[in-house]
Image 1 (tube, one colour):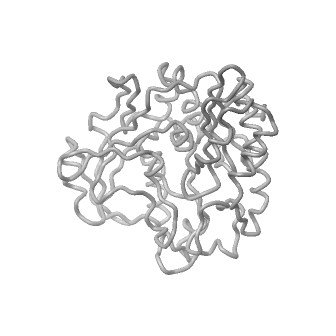
Image 2 (cartoon, helix red, strand yellow):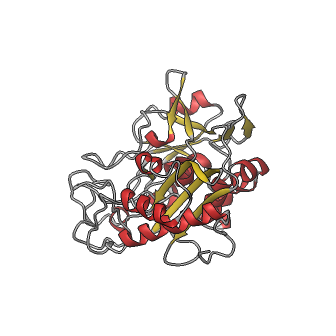
Image 3 (tube, one colour):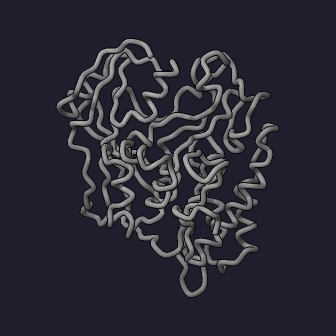
Length: 338
């Protein structure tokens, strides 16, 4: 780890002012940033501690939705009665991630901002366009078992590691951001993260000096027909090879609304609204689930080592839709696939 200076911000304006200089990073839980600093991947010259900012509350919105402050700990969000009761898909995804100790430290804002766990990104002795633009992508033609099958480019095939973000994508969440000008803006969650394209080093659409202050959930309830299904190499403390966040509204035996978001398969949580529309008006039956899975994966492309992810994702989508339709969400305690 390289030397750095430290500043504890007293308020949001001070935090943003401190971050206006190149080489500055915000730190809250630090569960990803500190690891990256130890590996010499991230090299900030200054850390701005934002833990004292008033962003650690879960609050009701006037429109009936819920606002999660950026400094709310993942475990606090997962076990909050309002989150668990009205947004159980999010609570389930939070509990599927990391370990109890990490969830106690990690924040909502930090979870959104975490970076890929690609082997080459972490190994500074290897080429990585995300870490060092123009150096190449070691995963293409290399060891790529955990890498993307959707939305990749010839510059980068890394995946986004978050479980929580997959659920937030399915729930049409929004990210509230404080700007250096003193104003705020709201970014739809589906537009927050980026596909790699020609600039894989840019993970998000945050502007310079901007600070996440909250995640906002709409006044919608999917608390009966939902599931978060996570398939991984071991049953705990492992990132998803494929995950599926699914929520359905079923009325009079037909699907009235569908949400399907995938994790572990792309540079950002992957959601295909055209595919979701195919289920509306259909009965919740396996043949329709299989057709939607095939549609979502119509452009999927393996890299050799991760070719297995395509049939795995197809089966995961179908299984998740069946779990949601049956009202039998995947347990994050007994992690055997239901």
